[in-house]
Length: 103
Picture 1 (tube, rainbow, N blue to C red):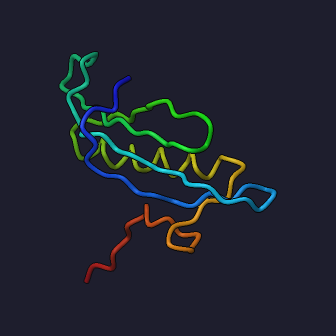
Picture 2 (tube, one colour):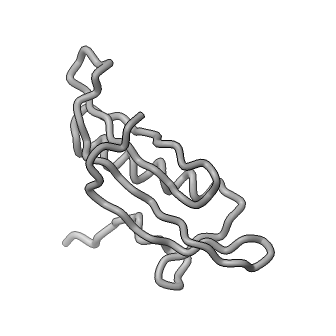
């Protein structure tokens, strides 16, 4: 799968079990119609570079926003399942969860 036009990117810091540090980059391609869908579904490609498998994955949704949100969620899951500690701006929260307080 092709990542296509990158619409968002974030550089993270990976920390290996031995304490060595390295760059991890997450990228999101622009959501696009899923060419295999007969229902008008969408796909949003994503990539994690720096953890060993730089392949492009995708998440799918009924519209472009759902595909994008599920792609961000898929990256969060992949990072959590890796054996590497990852942080952003020196914090373990990667800023990939948005839960604003709405009043």
